[in-house]
Structure formats: C-alpha cells, structure tokens
Amino acid sequence: MVETAYSHTSFRVPEIPHKYGPRVHLLDDPLAWSLLAQLCAPETVQPRVGNLVRMLYEKLAQAVIAAEFPRKKVAIPTRMVIKSPEAVYRGLAIDDETKAVTVGIARAGTMPSQVVYDLLNEVMDPSAVRQDHLFMSRETDKDGKVIGATWHDAKIGRDVEGRILLVPDPMGATGSSINSALTHYKTRLEGTPAVCITMHLVVTPEYIKSVLAAHPETIIYALRLDRGLSPSKVLSTVPGTHWDEERGLDEHQYIVPGAGGVGEILNNAWV
Image (cartoon, rainbow, N blue to C red; front, top):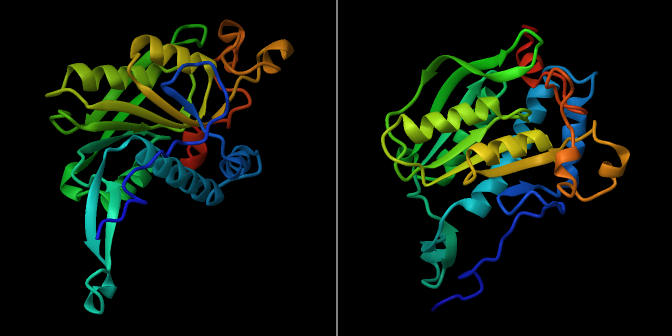
C-alpha cells in the first residue's frame, strides 16, 4: 500500500512581512516573542536566562531544520507491525544522511550551538554532524565603534564540503563576527558548504545589510527584528521599506531594544 497524504510537504516558517529579501526569515511566533521578552527583561537572571535561551533555540532549530534541510521518502515499520504487516509509516522525513556543522561563537553562542548540535544528533546520523568552536571578540576603534572581529582561538574540523553550516549566535548586531566566521569557513577550510544559515534571537537592520552585502548567499533566521532607534515614521512601515533610515544600534553598536549583553548574563561574567 502507498500512502500519499505525507508524500509531499509545503511547510514554510510563518514570517512577519518585510522587504529584506527572500533569504531573510523573521519568524511570526507570539510564543517565542513572549519568551524572548522575558529573556531581555532586567530582572531575568540565571538560571532563568539559560532556560529561556535553551527553549528559544530549540524552537528556532526545529523551524530551520524543518524548512531548510533535505527530505527523503521513508518506509518505517511501527511497533504494530507484529500484529499487522500494514503498520508501516510511508512518507517524508528529514534526510538523516545530510551533513551539517554547527558553529559555537563564544561566549553567547556556546549554549545555542550545543542546543542545535543536540537536536541534529537526534534527527541525523550522528556521524554526519559536527560542532566547531570559535573564540572571538569585537574589535573597536578609539571611539568605541566596532570595526571588525578579533580571533583568539578556534577548534574547527578540517572540511566543510557539502555540509549545511549553521551559526546560532543570539544577537545579530553589526555582523562583524558572523562575517569573519563565514569568510573563514568559505575560504580557509577544505571544500565548500552546501549552504550557510545564521540563527539569531534578535537582529538589527544594520546586521542584515552587512551580512548580505558580504555574503549574499547566506540565509538569515531570527525571532525578532530590533530597530528601536528608527524615526517614528519608519517604525510605522513594513520593515525594509526605508532600510537606509532604519536603526537598531546605538553609538556603541549595542542593540536597542536589545537584551543588554546575552553573553555576559549567560555566564555571570561582566567583562
């Protein structure tokens, strides 16, 4: 017998309207917005912060895997097969042979990457899944303006050929760290990634513009767009309508409304 109900899927992640282009996905998820608002509140500290980050990245990782990973047709017997030979699920599933690597950018990206890695190992053949670690920080000029990212250390596998590259970093502010990481993976390792996907709790219009300018093939997922320093007339329009006038970064390149240092509060280390 052939079941046709699950032989095709039109799954798409629900998104808010925007004009940043088809490679940007800003999720329309009121539950995630609620949890994220709690995460960003001044009174929220550990262990609540860690629990919220974990929950939010589980939701985001599920959305990305369902929307972006290859699928294949499967025929998997259920436990009922001992009573009925028809007890076989026939339909689509995520292709468990897909190769993937998740990149943890310390400090804020360490826990998110682990959450993504754990889920990938449940869904995929674990031998096809890898987690890399980067240690970098903002590089600023004498006025405190971000001018790039400084690498301190890294633990990275040798190849990326055909792998889906995932970079789960909570705050997409200027794009300096992400751009540096993507450049490294595309130019310094063996092979070429199949696709590069960044995964964020919050992004700014400046971040989106910076990453797509440097790496236009990148796919960006985020739970929330922060453009809180934009003029009122801009805030009343669909995001991206007046992209050049949108602002989500203050004079020190911190996000507004933002969260006020996710890496610091996750680790209780204010340096």
